[in-house]
Length: 201
Image: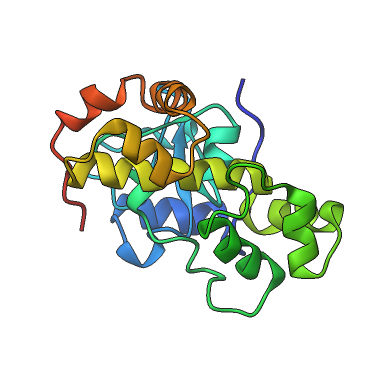
């Protein structure tokens, strides 16, 4: 079920990332994510759960890449609240611009990858290759993850009705919102609201 991952993520080798996760080094928060094969869950490097065995983990460059490989987000460290790729964020790249447009809703509703690529001055295939290189996931997968991230913040920190959250997060319908959240977290949005957000430092 889980796709193989390249040994290096953002130029970091396995040993460096493994050492960082053992000490929960906040410097790497958002730079890579830890996927645990035995549980099917992925975490941030700063997660406070019991450390899994090294043989049971893989590293991925983004939350979207973890989810593409079939992993679910950890409910303790909340990967959706991690910084977004500081390893390359801030550089003037096509991917960075595309991600800003995605955050502004470029792929919500009737938005297409072709239109997004055109706004970035590249072709859709080239944009897809750049996303795979930097994030290990497609623009559509990244957009879906960002919708979930926005929704989870509103679920955890507001009392907004779920219909409003679905709309503001960029989902096409309340039904689709409920389906995606349940698939990611194994719980409905209403059930997730009952869980108190955990503080991760």
